[in-house]
Length: 376
Ligand code: HEM
Image (tube, rainbow, N blue to C red; front, side):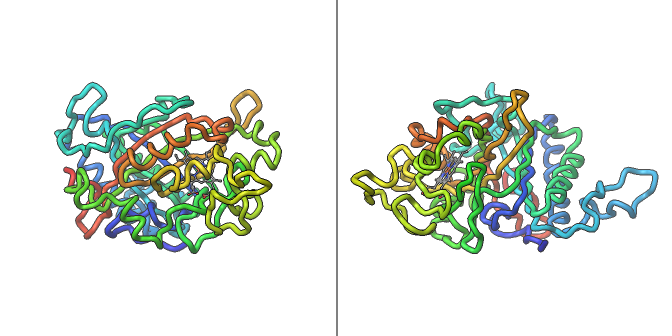
């Protein structure tokens, strides 16, 4: 129920202990006027500052304005606490340069080299209508109504300048991002986030998550991070008809305890040399084997959420993991891990249906700072 500080060196919503609910939204910018875009980013920052503190989106509020004008807040979060709301903004590659190479807002020269569309991966079944975007806002909160209220009010403030391209609701955080949090389970029933990068491990965050002072685009992006989203449909029915042994061999961890196969407790170190009955305990095609830093050569901060978007008309749940990862460079982060997962036994049970990448600027500093000021 508490408020999370909005200002700081980094944006909230990255290493902030993962809240329970997500409303993620990607926008297309529909104006070609740079001043209009800047005005929206300024209005968004002011509203985000207020809403994350548990206040109305606008200074007058849902009730106190003229009865003959639309209120500057939509009202559905009245009486609700801040609920740990964080709002995290990101800029997509197409904000800088359109697909056909046009420099839309005089920003082309400021696009950091790592901010490019992700490459295609084997098995991708991406739907372009729910992929990409010029801007994104990740809203996380412990109450879904608070997250939805925040996104709705930002959408309203952006009317005529930005329009919603796609959005995704999520529940049941599938990662823990702090050692203080118990590890939640994903829709396969496994603990997810055991071996995640954690907020307490600041040396690893500096190495793998935050854009550094000497990195491309550091003049506006240092202290920021790259956000990759993948909507991953989980094929629940085939998974549910596979045996417990098959499920554990697919992941590489025990379903109950979350321990690496061959070990006892959840946080026992993963050891790929451990053998059971003459076989390696963690199979070479298991998800954990291939994703682990020993074999992927890198690390990412995972912060995804489960989703169930109803059913697909064929009697199957349209369910899965809305995967979110933060990293210092997508090429040495998500892309490197995902390439290494090419032979993952889990691929039989998952389909990637949407993809996006954004550069998230550093945190807002003082009272008159706003999202992306150093970029514009
Ligand atoms: C670990 C599930 C997709 C990267 C894990 C674990 C589970 C899991 C149960 C073990 C617990 C843990 O350490 O967190 C899933 C499911 C996915 C999925 C159900 C899709 C529906 C991905 C993707 C990536 C990824 C797309 C990145 C490209 C990782 C990494 C680890 C991990 C880096 C930690 C491995 C380690 O250090 O031991 N995942 N995952 N996962 N996953 Fe995934």
